[in-house]
Image 1 (tube, rainbow, N blue to C red):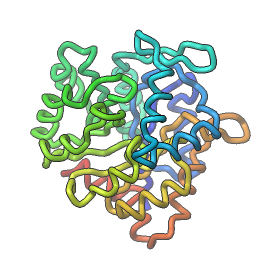
Image 2 (image 1 turned 120 degrees about the horizontal axis):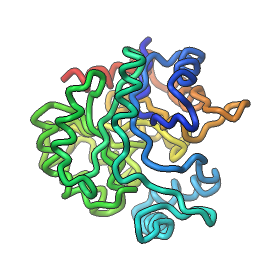
Image 3 (image 1 turned 90 degrees about the vertical axis):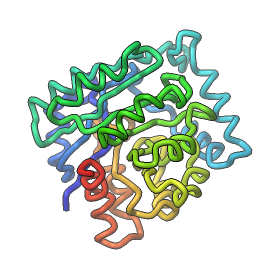
Image 4 (image 1 turned 30 degrees about the vertical axis):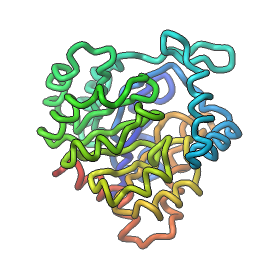
Length: 290
């Protein structure tokens, strides 16, 4: 069975590429799709806070509480303020750093091209610059932390649809996560909503039949095992992709990253062996070969 981690980050200050390969080999992860680091946050928020946020986000009536908490953590310049510290959010994450890893470890890593139309005056030129680099397979977008409305993405999404490049998007609240318009306006674009459809969860899952091009990954300490099970039951194994959000959260005994934690969520799912194989790798392999 091929195991592909469809959502991880290259953050060598926490886990360099050589160390990542060793950990992949230890737990049986064949390939990892890397995203450039986008912030200086090296510790996951407390479990109690993550649990509370999951609870309020799963209900439409209380989701506004989570949005208010999120907006309270942003500075005027768009950085994060947590625990009395200001943590930078990088407006233009470094695709070049991922390109170097792809060249050094062909076959073990693939890459997402990070675009931010809010700060990049020519995002389509940036896409053209990187999409020909071997190993890059699609585009990563983050309207949640980069704080823009998804309407700003329409030229990028139109080009990705034309090129048949998948898009991995971390949706934001409200108009910063307008997945309905994305599904309607770009029906042939492969869209992967990060972290089980954060911050909409159940509301996004309920519309899966309306948007057959919409998929989700199962990554991050934003989630827990119960939420992952609910997501797979609602979306179906054929619409879900294994991911980790490495190297954030899930520490092992040596305080390094534990690839086995979120992998166990998928291994324990009440699905057939064939469905588990789809989640672990076949779904992703099919999406990038379309």
